[in-house]
Length: 102
Image 1 (cartoon, helix red, strand yellow):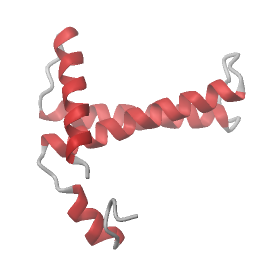
Image 2 (tube, rainbow, N blue to C red):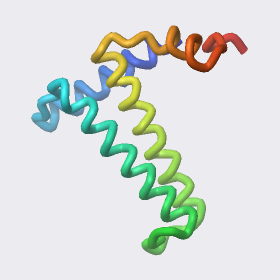
Image 3 (tube, rainbow, N blue to C red):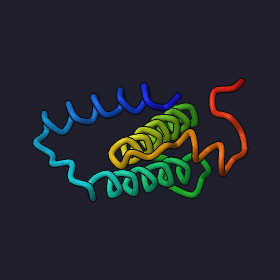
Image 4 (cartoon, helix red, strand yellow):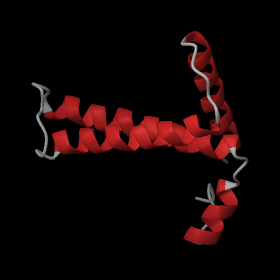
């Protein structure tokens, strides 16, 4: 279920890194994930009134939260891909359901 999505994120990330001369060493994957958690938190704080809106509308702030959550998901999948993690097996074991079964 995740392998195709992981590959798509990997290709996009690799292209971005090449274009911006970024070395994606093993630590980079975890550090980027942590950075994205912070950005999701910041977007949530703005949307929930715990941070400055910077003149953005509610809809713009919801879009920011959605965009940052997409980045977070991408970096979770990149970390899993880089480390050869089997997320489907882990979901079955930890969440007790079959991913993609619905």
